[in-house]
Image (cartoon, rainbow, N blue to C red; front, side, top):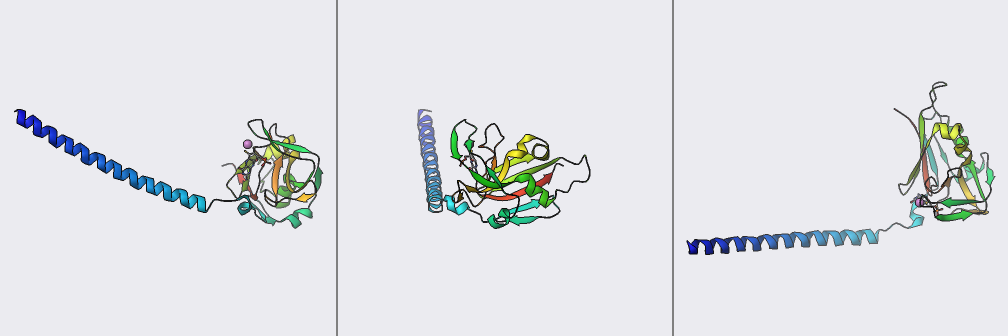
Length: 196
Ligand SMILES: Nc1nc2c(c(=O)[nH]1)N[C@H]1C(S)=C(S)[C@@H](COP(=O)(O)O)O[C@H]1N2
Ligand SMILES: [Mo]
């Protein structure tokens, strides 16, 4: 009986050892996968200039989808904006500009003509998307009926200089209590969707 207990113990102990070894080798594989991923990420890490897009696509539920470039934007109704701060959701001021030039988002959308099918057909949302995946969302009402819309511009110039690191065009929403969340650098598309 005592022998049996001894051999059972030996058997269990060696089983435990094999298990540990397996876990170790699994950990090693995981670690090498992780480190190779890390190397790949480091090698291909995106720089601000990689996100710069030369044009902005206006698309979705619109009659006239079109592409905006800095020069085509300059042919629209350009407004000069007074100084503004970009304030993050956290409350921190992340950037400021003494002057900027751009076009109202509502003017851009009026050129594209949203496919409204009547007076009460106004449940649309507009997504402004950047090339790094960042997005800002507006509703048709806040742009066309509320004051918010009067402060939403696609800008191409700050303090007399063309934009560079933040893309050729960026969006600002200056009537938001904190303008950071709906400030969009590297804008690549303005998309109109109907609420389904
Ligand atoms: N494309 C893009 N736009 C973005 C972000 C981002 O990560 N990508 N960050 C946002 C956040 S969280 C803030 S607070 C402001 C900061 O604006 P700034 O770059 O002018 O300081 O940009 C916003 N716009
Ligand atoms: Mo932010």
